[in-house]
Amino acid sequence: MSDIAARPHLRTRPGLRLSATTVIAPLAAVAFVVTALATGEQAQLSWTGISGLLERMVALGIVSIGQTLVILAGSIDLSVAHLISVAAVLSSWVMQGDPGRILEAVAAVFAVCAVVGLVNGLLVARLAVNPLIATLGTGLILKGLLSTSFDNFAGAVAPQFQFFAYGSIGPLPISLLTLLILALAASLMLRRTVFGAHLYAVGGNAAGARLAGIRTERVVVAGHILCSLLAGVTGLYLAARLGSGAPWVGKDGLYDLESIAVAVIGGTFLTGGRGGVAGTLAGVFLFAVLDSAFTMIGIDPFFQQILRGVIVVAAVAAYTFRTKAHVG
Image 1 (cartoon, rainbow, N blue to C red):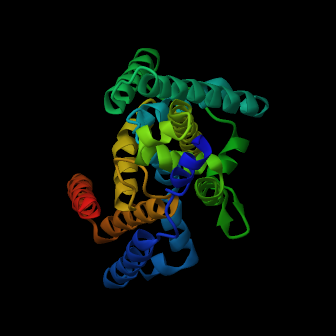
Image 2 (image 1 turned 135 degrees about the vertical axis):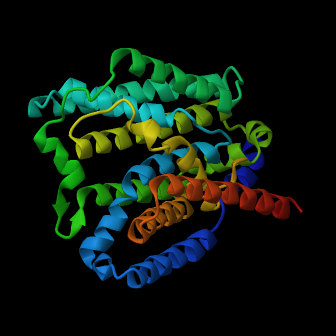
């Protein structure tokens, strides 16, 4: 009986829905080209300029993949920004510029991130705490620990570790290649594995998934752990890029809110159960184009934040409209 009941839920993952990708990405690319030509910044259209544009996607792209996974499961994670700061600070503090301690630092970061993800998942799944409140509280705890322990850059990463941020294989930067590999792995997991089907099923209808025999609590916990681990990768990348970890690097990057925004822009439903990584990357690409266009035009940085805020509000409004249309 449970096997038969499970079948509809295993089919809840969508087919090849790339509407967000096929609309957002080409429009953003056209906007980038037009802005470069209009401002006389034709150098931005060379491979160096395009590579720089794509590298703008790396930090937000990696954490947004994790945010997409946890949103698909019907949850959300507001702790990622502070966890990114923890990962960046911890890696450089443990490493202290010593190449021999790279593995130790990376292992420490992943261990801490896994624990944070586990705590978030248990709070949401086992204790039924609202995910907004649970992960906001976890984030504030992490912020407090950082504030009481560090007030500036902590330690330094090994020069060899900076290859993660600045190295390349042929024309492809290592950081961009990492983002592409993680995105491909996450997409394949969602479309080709039982766990991916369970993520969609739990996010789409948790009660129905439970009746079908899916261990919904484990799915939500696993989603949070994956989200936290990817936040850790983002922190490692930023530490490699800066040469050291800073306690404000995640918060100032607005990675919590922007990772949610790009997921929604890319077609992921905040209620869970529908969306994907391809659309999220399209949203990240849009944000990267906006940053680059603002720079080429010479818009004041503070006004840039206003414009980005307008875009986030518009994304949520579009989500609401799309949700009502879907329900209707």
